[in-house]
Amino acid sequence: MGESRNELLAWVNELLQINYTKIEQCGTGGAYCQILDSIFGDIPMTRVKMNAKHEYEFIANFKVLQTALKGHKVDKPIPVEKLVRCKMQDNLEFMQWMKRYWDANYGGQRYDPVARRKGAPVDTPATIAPLAPSSRTGGGLGIGSGRAGGKTPVSGHRSGSAQPNEAVQHLQAQVREMSTHLEGLEKERDFYFAKLRDIEILVQQQVEVLEAEGKDDQVLRDIQRILYSTEDGFEVPDPAVQADEEETF
Image (cartoon, rainbow, N blue to C red; front, top):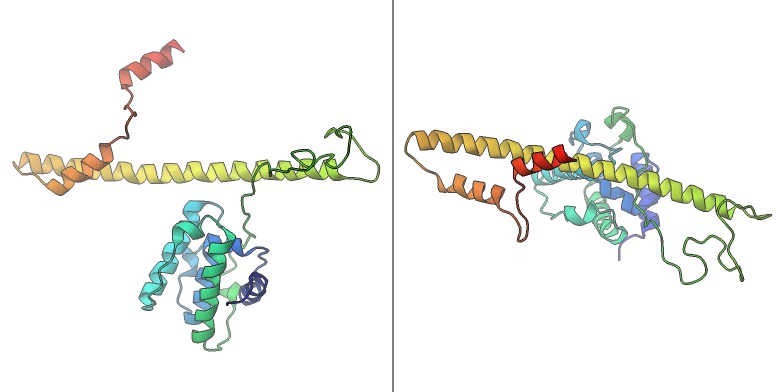
């Protein structure tokens, strides 16, 4: 058995001089990168976003980690898809491995985590919580729960209790967090779409050059087939029809 999550949190916060409150916050990848940097001192920390908030930034951090492990001939698969979801169990297991590796390889040298980050901001990462946790006792949002014969309205006031205001503030915080998460997903979508578009243009240009020379390349044709393939039931909209609909609207 490895260390508990509380023990690991205390260790990583002290080592890196950060203030994480949950082990799943390590799913942003920044802490893992700097733990490795404390061992080897050669991780390109300027490429690591310690205050990453969006999944595409998490993935970029893990790419730095993967490159560093490979460069030091560390044969350790990284379950990136699981870790970036910021789930407790996945990150707990990976952090336990990181701690064992650190114990076995850290040479005891002085390490200044703040200097290595060159003063880059380190915000405590947030984890996305369910919007409306289910409850079998009382009201669905926990407002006025346990009170028989009626409900306390959100805008009401009950002597000696700040529960309604706290619930509203909690929900507002979740809405803000979900809005930020949605913005990140949209940026991630646009990021990968732009890459696919660049690939499409590059492949098309190369195909046209080969056609002019009377040649063909099956690999390029296969790439085009993948780019233009669609799922069952999905039809690519006709630009002319789409334009007419927009004008009518």
